[in-house]
Image (cartoon, rainbow, N blue to C red):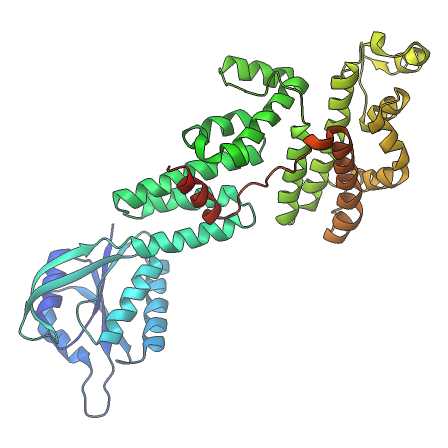
Length: 430
């Protein structure tokens, strides 16, 4: 791999000679000051440097000695040119020489581009400059990267972009040299964010497993609700129930009365999709929430599985009608059919649906025309907010408040900031 050394050149050649001889680059970019009136540019030092380092490929970049904006711009553009022209090259810098402005500018560019940073130390005759170079050592500068990374992660969490937040932490752990305490802190944050990503993607079991070391911190606000959601899924999905048992996951709410947690979780999931601007996805979640409400209601209050109706559970006067729906040996009901059956059974949820049927069916038509359903339309924010969300979410919350009475409680949305995550960890002493 070709190694490129970038040096700021001042009036003392010795530290730069030391840097070149220690680092042994294949190519050197000398950054020198331009002449200013009667003051010569620092490129006049180069013959002395090159005479002590042997033949070496090099190039000179001239900059103004005390103009930070110009220095940074020229250095940044030149080094980016080198990166493009010499792909795969290892570019490092030594900011020992030159004016304070030159050194500060090169240091900033190096941190911005994540370049290796070296400093040559040696004997000082005064506090102005290093006159003789003794040691060139690499600086492991991690804290600025750490702070920049946390800022980036926080901006991603704001919109629930858990996947991107997790990927940025993983990339930083590979590419930056962090001290042990910062590295462990980032690993902990990555695991927590990974758990929320899994939950957001309905990989419920793995989310519960991933959050386990931090369950104490997140139990009250999140994980206890996850437990209730998992209990609902076990009722609605035999495969999910089987996996929970096979993997020996403890679901504390398994034998408790349902609070329709999975319906509320779907509403939260829809909200996160909408925050991301994915209104077709959000609509699909609201549709599933409405369907799950009817399915749970039929199962819990009437012992009817909407996906495999036992005809003996159907009132006698309705049996003939529902028997005609049998296909391939099973009677499966769609969303509207679920609510129609609830209404025919005299269930209050079915009656609520009947009272809002026209508005709800209109909202469902928008869903059916979506690219994620049966059409090719893309749902816009205004359509989602004023028609789909307003009607479907409003209906669902009204039903839940009526059937749960005093037991109704709004669950907490997943965290969208590191501040919230850190607060809960701190309060639990984790």
